[in-house]
Image 1 (cartoon, helix red, strand yellow):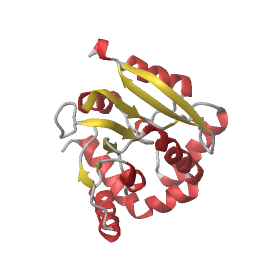
Image 2: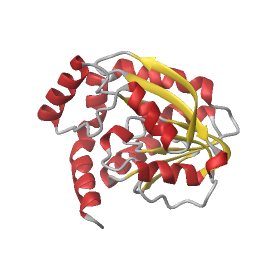
Image 3: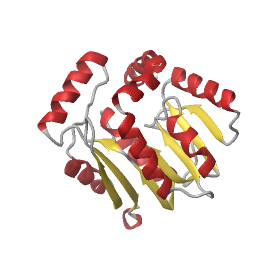
Image 4: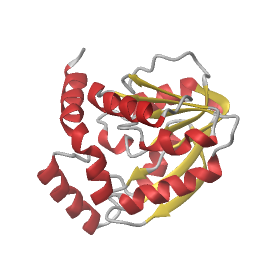
Length: 215
């Protein structure tokens, strides 16, 4: 395991026990908007991959709406909590696994939908998980990437700095919404839909597909 993996795993393992409370206090409205938007982008025949699943907020919400969900996270402690929730709720069509988003352990073109919610802005090399998403996504599949854009305005940059100092929850990529869109299109993805969600941080709920002419 490399140094980057060790650092990420240690941080998220420590954060796991307060993760749900953190989301509830800081991002309740934002996550409600994400979940509400997901409803229109799913169907009952989809096999879905949720990258950076945390304690399983998204898989537990979408599980009844899709064929199957695989939730992965670099943190064993996050996955332990998610699995315990799953056992308590007796949900059968979710599979939680410890995996690194930089190198996914799935065959090519395995999933109809890949979700990476509030993940890419936390990564030093977001191009690596994006390349993995393109690899495991079917040619006609959909990548849903709701992402905080802390660089959208001065207020959000200040809040990101304060939140990071108090919690250690560091926003690595302080994109504006325009910069985030450009990053995705430069990665060989085509934007199908964008919804702006206002909150403590502006969030871009972006739905993209593979640009197959570049693959």
